[in-house]
Image 1 (cartoon, rainbow, N blue to C red):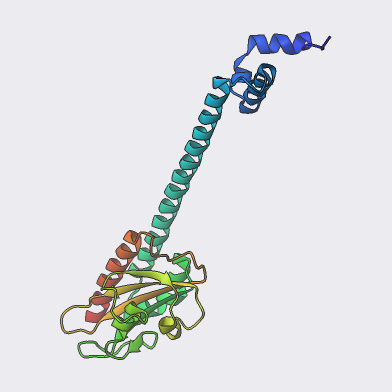
Image 2 (cartoon, rainbow, N blue to C red; image 1 turned 90 degrees about the vertical axis):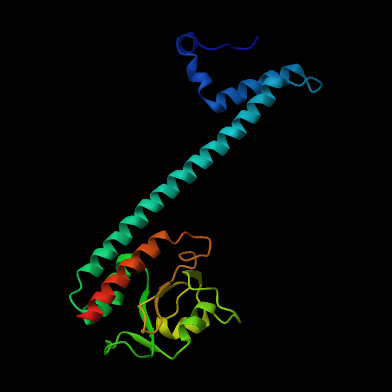
Length: 227
């Protein structure tokens, strides 16, 4: 004769049956035991239903965790960009603004490089040494990354390209290129960001925060150019 549950355990289970119902491992063991009693030629639909529900619950839990992680990343990214924008606004003049990009703003954005690239041309005052001056047409070539046709004037997120490596000044794995329109009569400009993390800037990523940062930077830069 098989030994049953001891009286104390039995009393606890009778008093709180939800302890079993809420435990997936216990419920699975009970269903498996029931199917074993029925034999191989009988299928217990309840067991199959439980398997389907468990699979669905696992998918829902995974989706829930993904949504939470994405929300946390968005919140964290927003806070990072806000701190960087405040850093831009604190710069007093053009030299201070350009010098702060690599020394102060890049660490706030958690990236390795942050450069301002401007094509040589009329309409600009004497620029600080930290500004990288490019020959005419270089911004378009950088955006194209060696392709025959440029990808337009929008933000580019990609693996680091050979054409931009000299501007970074160091080896990076991924990069963001943000074109800047400095107004009529002024040459094209570009914000270049570089990260050692190959997954930091990928084409599938959103660009809203980078676009916001670029808009603020452009306004601050234009104001310092007029000073």
